[in-house]
Picture (tube, rainbow, N blue to C red):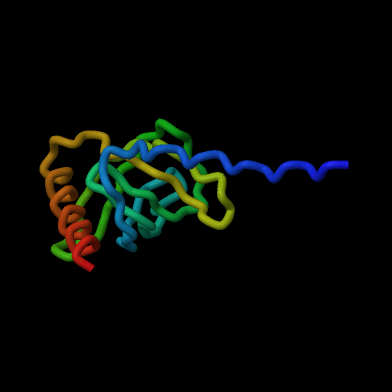
Length: 121
């Protein structure tokens, strides 16, 4: 009797993000009905970020984040785009809700600097 064939790994899905990501732990806070949730990012891009949290959220939910950047705190409105189902990596990905605000411009500048430093190494 012939051996069963080895399973074929499916090809990796092509990257669908508009912007490159960089691993970065940036302290942040966001407000829930139950109070303020303290967390940090796992990775960032100039259009959004993934942050660690066990708090339940829904895709499409609008959140106001307060983020501690090196030059001081800032606020960003973001929309939940993805909720992780990986127990080893709890959290969710968000995208900037309004990318034409002064805060969004500041965020993009911060991320561009991080991405530039990451590619220089």
